[in-house]
Length: 263
Image 1 (tube, one colour):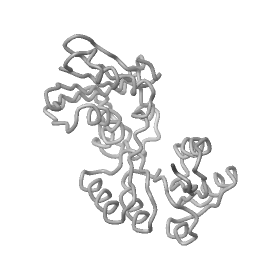
Image 2: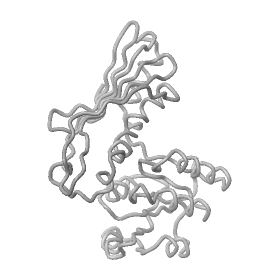
Image 3: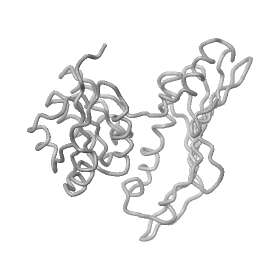
Image 4: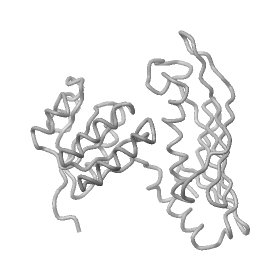
């Protein structure tokens, strides 16, 4: 049983930080102690509301010695450097998805964690849903038979594609949309079936951004893991919310709505 309180700091004071702070407040054995952001005014504003310390750089926060762990909540291209610096300083690290912008970055973080004896974890929040636990239980019970295919959907409008802001990281390059949203879908497949082999990608519904450049609103990825055929559907157009995982087996089918935590 964890006996020591884990002092935890947040690196990044943006939108997602408030969700992490609220969650940490409800956990036993964890104490939120610091907020760090290169925009120190934002760090101070959030820290004052939470009654914790504020820092304008990771160096400053590490020097203060107020954390045993950190959550890296900054833009994805900064994750690797911040996570590795924190690990080398002796802290455990939770990194928001995408963990890195390449497999090499993810491997580097895992390697540093192994060498320092610290934990680096990916923030795949949907894997902790009660409905997902029930989906896995249905698979493991054999009630679905032999799983032959899976369809994993993220059909959810992305407002910045139409109304901005257009300088967000996820819109700077075409691949960033997949790096930002794809981890939700790939995490399910990897957790359920193991390593995923990508077979085909089809792009559709391009939209022109102000200032030039197009971004596709539809991504369809065909893949395979072991003996299971997998289809990933990513759709960012206006329409009904469909964030789901459907497993089809030889004797049954199960569908989880991870947007609403139902099975």
